[in-house]
Image (cartoon, rainbow, N blue to C red; front, side, top):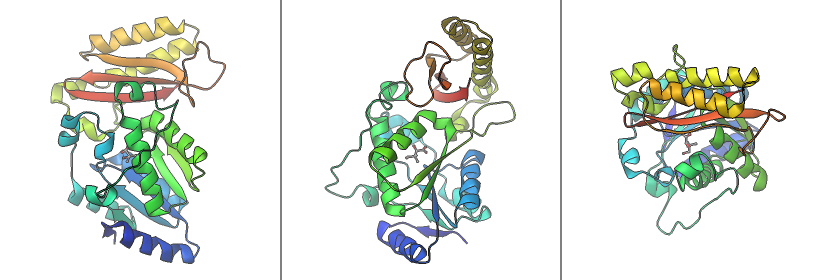
Length: 279
Ligand code: PAF
């Protein structure tokens, strides 16, 4: 039975009891509208911790676009049923006033890795993520936190944050879960029209094509240009970025001498899709 907790005080009391008995707590931070990607994180947490907390909080501070916040799907009853089936111990689902009470005045900002790609396109987004994640780590007192690699840059930001602030939590990145046609699972996919849904796999396909070209020696700029043209030809609107970056710092790279990652953001109708793959 998954216990639903809505206040930090109740959660902290519960976790303090567990920790007195030496129990290792794993947390999966989410914004709800759970899909198989989230459930794979809950399963990883279940396998690698004694107790699992899943948090659901649609964090207003990380939405730079108010319409995106309003349209973000909210499906708590359905989410709870899914978490019950996964044997999750606690669903922590606070209201915004619980997370950001009157007088809340702190922003956590991670320089460098937050500034490019998603950070440049969505000003303030990673400050919102870093602030809420710091709060959720403090409130849950978890020893392990599980994040999907679908949000690759977010994982690098959170890793930097816990290293810089000596937060005693181990970050466990987990692989992106994809639909059968290759589209990365995302809570935003439900907003795609049927026609756009059928076009959507062009993004991961073009990325795979670019990765293969780069690996086989095609100049990086040429491979990225060809892949961008494939995405546009498939019916996408603006390709905000399609870039090969250092996998950890996300700085620009000109060769494959360090681990690199191919990252993309592109619009399909009024839905913004992001994806990333290894090269
Ligand atoms: O990845 C998400 O769903 C969110 O950015 C997170 C980590 C739950 C913070 O609100």
